[in-house]
Image 1 (cartoon, protein in one colour):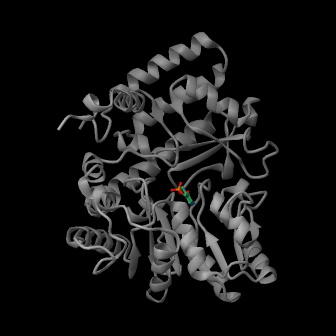
Image 2 (cartoon, helix red, strand yellow):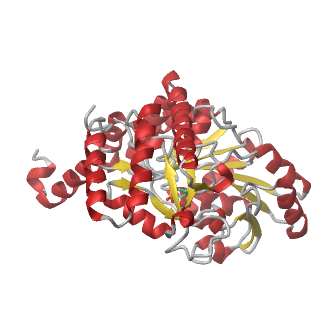
Image 3 (cartoon, protein in one colour):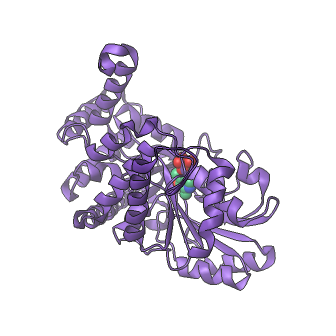
Amino acid sequence: MPSLREVDELVSLGIEREVDRQRRELVLIASENFASRAVLEATGSVLTNKYAEGYPGRRYYAGCENFDYIEKLAINRAKELFSASEVNVQPHSGSQANMAAYFSMVPIGGKIMAMKLDHGGHLTHGSKVNFSGKFYKFCHYGVDPDTETLNYLEIAKMAKSFRPDLIVAGYTAYPREVDFKEFKHIADDVGAKLLVDMSHISGLIAGKVHQSPVEWADVITSTTHKTLRGPRGAMALTKTPFIKSYNSSVFPNIQGGPMGHVIAGKAVAFFEALQPGFSLYAQQIVKNSRILASELLENGFRIVSGGTDTHMILVDVRTLSMTGAEAENVLKSAGIVVNKNSIPFDPNPPVITSGIRIGTAAVTSRGFMESDMRYLSSLIIDALRYKTDVKSINKISNKVSEFARSFKLPGVDD
Ligand SMILES: *Cc1c(COP(=O)(O)O)cnc(C)c1O
């Protein structure tokens, strides 16, 4: 059978260029990572051909025996990895995993409490332009103005007056450890259910460098492609009473056929995360982000909340007389890929912002250790200082490219 290059030169070219970009740039987008070759192979497999509406043993199509075997493997490995009692591996994305969670626990028009978007919440946590904000009444908590961290007393107060049906803990731009037990107490006090959206930190939880929400949350959702290093997709862990309604919320309520090839990729990623090396990987992610944070602090940068406990750092770029959008552009022209991000109490709109979000999961997958992080820090600091000085930025760009190419691109070069 002819290969992609022979059949479709244009798509093939686009993919080849993307491989080259991923190899020569330094990817510091906090929500990105590099899946292994085994994950890529499973995700690129013939399972994409198969319809399997329903769940293992209860399908609406014939010929699902191998699909069942793979989905059960994925479920059992996720159970083992997170010590969870029930698992659903079918959500196509984190947004759909959250939609299914809301539909399974809160009637339309019901009340949900979650983090403000500009303090680190996700679009599905009640944005007006998202289904969540259209279907439910949201009340938003934020971080404390002084510490820029969660203030559990304030969140408890808000819960007492708002009386939500559901409280959401879990963020896209919060660099510190979250105390899930505190959230459970707050939820119990007002008779609310608790959803933990661990999308960003599920790899850190699997690697035991962040506390687990499994004992406390009623439902836990997660993407599988961030720190967990799996294929693009999502999953949910639930306590036993919630699995029936969660499953039916995913199928038939919001999805049709599950993606067997992606579920196979998830099963492989869970297997990899169960190996002893994964915990070392998770530890290295946090070590790397702490080194970057301390180098930036030593050089006079302001970091939201003063540091990090995770893979993520939020930098306030106002001290450099820049906006987040400008900082993103300067770094991108040097081959360093981060994203602009609102910081708490940001005076600038979300398309401009006053911050950048930096994550270390992807470079750690490429094998970055402490000394590499120090060099990377110096490149970031230089680029942000030289800003629009094209000659200097070009010099840095060459250094970045040479440095990045000295590391293998997982899934491609190994
Ligand atoms: C990434 C993320 C999501 C959404 O995931 P998609 O797969 O992009 O839909 C949801 N919640 C949080 C906290 C996230 O970080």
